[in-house]
Image (cartoon, rainbow, N blue to C red; front, top):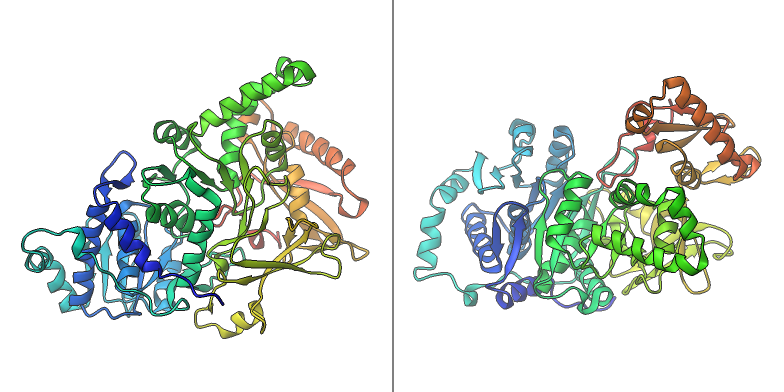
Length: 555
């Protein structure tokens, strides 16, 4: 495997080079400049050292995105400790389990998380630190308590004049394979596994982003962070890459609604938009579709002479709704609705769909929007090899396999799961099925564990049926399940819209029956739906916003 540059050196260099530039802002709150981040890192290092934290010790972080969270993560890595980011949407029990399983010595907890966790359920933890001001919420260690109480005094003693850029000097990882993070996958299987991410994978994802973005995202560029940083997708491409490039990152720390996100886009004008499909779909469906789905617009779009101009106008509106200043919109994390995708393609909108996994920290495939083939997820990203485990990869779907610098070391304390996932030749088995065209573009056909078998052994990919169903009248979201040899669609309808139109439950049932017939006209006999069942509540989702299928399979 190729030798990679030192990752922590890049953090050090960015802080020194961008000393007086704006770095991290809590939207509608404080802004930290790079030197403020350096100061926070330094104070945390003094606290770690005085309380006996050793290189390689685990430090967990759980809270909503914020400048304080980001600084604590950087402090952990640059001290030589191993960061354990935990999604703040997890339940208290899940947080306790991850802290205990990882053997974390300290837990940084956000304002909401700090009211949910219980130190007695985490017997090995030495302290809980409150992210907004790094105060101690709980301590089992006299050394830690003393260090926090005397922190400013110790800092003042170490830097009697004032703290300057030349004081910044961080721990450098000893080997590219050194463990940097343990990231616990939420997983739609209900069981979380600790993915061991080495420094080489952090560097490799950063280097990929440098190649992919070029000079479009550079020193002083604004970026809006929407995805949770505790997830590799948000951490790598809405924080790490931008921080190392000298950008200014804005955090939407409250759980953002599409309206708040749209307002932030308009104010911040980000240089790049990184998103999951759900956010893009909601903005397009709520803000753009209503304007263009009238008869006049449809007529204009179908007139060859005028349609180009009309498409340009619509494109300008969509671009404006994302801040008007971005190089491209990168979508990943879950399947993209085909109706929305084909609309964006028709108006020449600069979007691309990537593909990744926590186990690859996260990037696997990508193509620039200019080269992107609609329906695909791009080609193997730099430093990665991708192949399809199939006798005919162009026509017969097979498991997508990945090898290269991005691939994890394995699952923490779970050798059996590691052996099942990384084979003896170093290929990571994604569990996803796909095909690859002659140009190397990968098309995902679904997760192999969701694949259903038709009565005559046909492969049925429920996601493909769901994608069509989700574009139909009053369907908000859906799951296709198998009951015996029958396929059933579970649908959570657009209740607000149905209510506005004055529809009763019977009306909704009739509309869904109509949807089912229309859908079945587009499907082969073996994958037609026998019924659609209405679901009053939204389906439960993982933090990546994919539906937790396993909860609905036996219903």
